[in-house]
Amino acid sequence: MSFSQLGLSPELLRALEDAGYQTPSPIQSKAIPACLEGRDVLAAAQTGTGKTAGFTLPILERLSREPQGHKRPVRALILTPTRELAAQIGESVEKYGVHLKPRLKSDVVYGGVKVNPQIARLRDGVDILVACPGRLLDLVNQKAVRLDQVETLVLDEADRMLDMGFIHDIKKILRLVPKQRQNLLFSATFSKEIRELANTLLDNPVSIEVAPRNTAAESVDQSIYMVEKPQRMALLTHLITHHQWSQALVFTATKHMANRVTQHLQKAGITAAAIHGNKSQNARTAALSGFKSGEVQVMVATDVAARGIDISELPNVVNFELPKTPADYVHRIGRTGRAGASGQAVSLVMPDERGQLKQIEKLIGRAIPVATAEGFDFTRAVPETPDEREQRPGGGQRRQGSGQARNNNGGGARNGGGAGRGGAGNRTRSGGGSTSGDEQARPARRRRRSSPRSSGNSGSGNR
Ligand code: ADP
Ligand code: MG
Image (tube, rainbow, N blue to C red; front, side, top):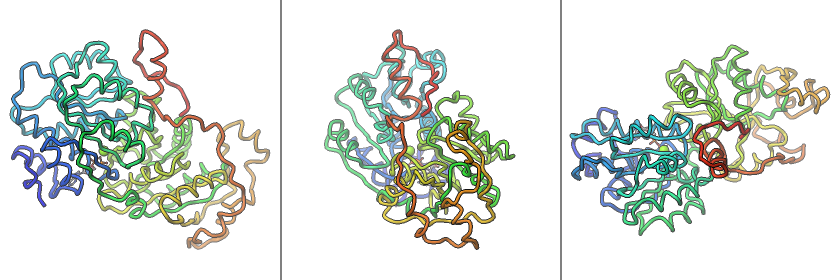
């Protein structure tokens, strides 16, 4: 199968050649013809399988075939949960559409940056709009954009949008677009919620499921290190330096912890940057481009901020803290070993995370081997917060924890996961509460309460 068999114009084929794409990915060879026919599509495929081109190419193709009025109403609307993802899709639209004549106009809008420049840009009209839901609604309310000419609506990372509590915003947007339209729903997973959304949204869709849910879990080399809280900062630094990791993406559960880990790494002389919803858009963009260029060795991220970000050939992913849901584990480790490259995913597991570990192992269908931290001195403790010292008198001292046991194991051989997992009870984390993640969902809730709606990103919540 080649791209030329999919029904794309020579201008688009040329752009794909420029990009170095030789053959369509499985999701692309199924989704592109269906989208071109005007069908609704429901597609589930792992991250890194080329979903973006799967919907942007047919959109470009269809829109470039139709005559463009001079007013340029939005004809294709792509909704996506995070700013980084929106920016990335916007870049793809530009890249694939570069040889089209006349060019289609595209734009990207998201919160956390000034709204006025976006309003000004939208005034000139735009064919393809990539948007995060909250900011889009702001712009509609300010009459900066109308959605009544939308022909194709895309929900990208739909599962994530649901996780982040965007369903109400999405429903509002659905009332603003014409009833007659093409709907494309892309997701990493086919959860029950996604199927429900698909049932209400899609009309006789072509359903595409490419990779089984856990491909990433099979292709990525995974291991865990059992560790006690006071040692985990030091263990992270040790792993990075001992293994001479050229680059690593480190996940934390909270923004607060992302900052702490970043500061710790920086103190240890490692170039590190944090990326999460409390950072300004500029800081996030700078961190991401520094990481992509290789200047930044370690990027520390929360799940939502990192979701869908495409970093080619990322060799190492570290779960500094295990994710809240097992599905997120698969998403996280899917950041490495993309497009056939080999990748490594390491998780630091504290005693109170054993329950989460069990759930993850249940989902991926096997036990993750326990690794030995060669050369790591488990007496090296770094108190993470002042109150921790209070909570754990002598917390910095050598403990007969599971990490210690592993350390004695020596020789670098993995011990297959037997001994270390029993023992200490399954304390679950406290204060879990809401699962509606990171940046965009919170300001949206705040906005609803306060009037007039403000459009900043002043959130300082911990998650
Ligand atoms: P997903 O949305 O499924 O996570 P992306 O659309 O972000 O995946 O694509 C992942 C990476 O693969 C991107 O760097 C993209 O440029 C690249 N890519 C997409 N399609 C192809 C292809 N047909 N051949 C080679 N590379 C591709
Ligand atoms: Mg994607």
